[in-house]
Length: 269
Ligand SMILES: Cc1cc2nc3c(=O)[nH]c(=O)nc-3n(C[C@H](O)[C@H](O)[C@H](O)COP(=O)(O)OP(=O)(O)OC[C@H]3O[C@@H](n4cnc5c(N)ncnc54)[C@H](O)[C@@H]3O)c2cc1C
Image 1 (cartoon, protein in one colour):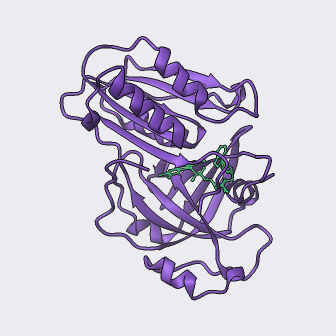
Image 2: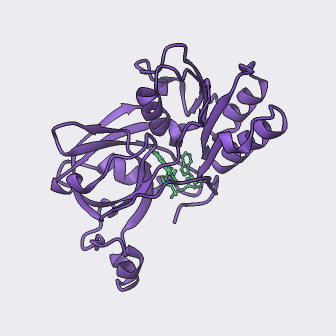
C-alpha cells in the first residue's frame, strides 16, 4: 500500500560493504554502506529507499544478486542460498567517501525474538557484504503548500529526519514521531525554522507501533493553511492518518502521501 512512488530512472544492483556500524540508541543502529558501486546510485528524493539483500549472520554461502532482475536470479538458487531482503531508507549520503548511512530500528516480537533485519544490524561489522537496489522516493511537497505534516513510527524515523534536514526553510513542519522508548528521542534534529517535533515514546513495549502517533494527530491543533502531508510506518498508521486528514481535516488527497512500511504481525518478504 503506497502512493505515488517515483521509481529511479536508471538503477543498478549495487555490490556494497559495511564500512561502519554504531548503536545510536536502544532501538537504533546506524550502518554505513560503501564501495565503488555507490557512484551508480543517483541521489533522488529525500525519502529515497532501497532493498537490502543480506545473509543471516552465521550463514555462509548465501548468494547476493548482481542484477536488477534479482527475482529471476534468486529463483535459480536453492532455498538455502537465498538472501534476506528488507527495505531501508537512505538516511544520508556521506560526501567524498562513496558511502551512505541507513538506520535500522531494532525490534523483537513474540513470534520472532529477533527479526532478520534486527539480527543483521546487530551483527553488521566492517567487511560484511550486501547488495542494494534503489527503490526510489515518494516525498514531493504539493505546489503552494505553506507547511508540512510528517507522521511516522520508528520505521519512518530515518526518512523523516532526512526530509527535515533537506526541506526548504519556507516549509515548516509539524512532526509526530513515535519511538519505542524515551531514550530513542533524538536531541540533534535539523529542521526548517518554525518546525515542532512531537516525540511520542511508547510506555509499553507490547503496544502496536503507530497507535500513539495516530491518536496524537487526531487530537492535534494544526494550522488551517495549505498543508502537504507525508506519513509512513505501520500500515494502520499510514492509512489511518490519511483517512483522518481527508475526512476530518478536508485535506485534498493530492496533498497527501502515505506509505505502509510494514504490517504488524507479518514479516516482510
Ligand atoms: C520504503 C521503505 C522504507 C523503510 N525504511 C526503513 C528504515 O529506514 N529503517 C527501518 O528500520 N525500517 C524501514 N522500513 C521498514 C522495514 O523494511 C520493515 O520494518 C521490515 O519488516 C523490517 O524487517 P525485519 O526483518 O526487522 O522484520 P520482519 O521479519 O519483516 O518482521 C517480523 C515481525 O516484526 C514486526 N516488525 C517489522 N518491522 C518492525 C518495526 N520497525 N518495529 C516493530 N515491529 C516490526 C513485523 O510486523 C513482524 O511481526 C522501511 C520500509 C519501506 C517499505
